[in-house]
Image (cartoon, rainbow, N blue to C red; front, top):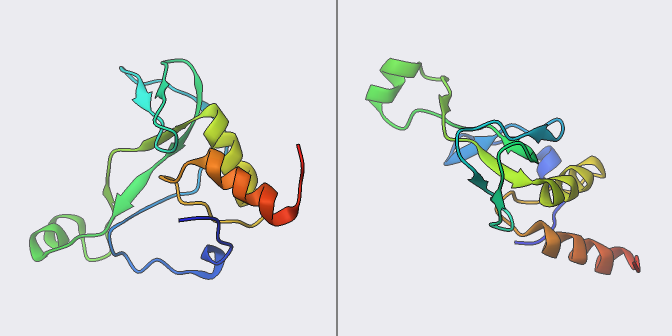
Length: 119
């Protein structure tokens, strides 16, 4: 999808799922390895990663009765490896809005092309 800086003013209306912005890099402490939602590499248990807590809102009357009209339904979290997670955190810190299922390595290349930065 590419980099965008428009999401800071965007208000999610509850369609589909959303996620909370992660604060920092954590250590993966699950029972099994997880796949990076960006580059698809397997993240080992105990490795550094970024965790995205995902949610959605009730989609029908039954879910509204269970969770309330504005209740959040927790979904399985997604994870990014330390490399993709660091790119994500840095891009969001300077005001960009990368999509968590985009390849962060491609997003950083796009950022370098837009800014004229040469490694």
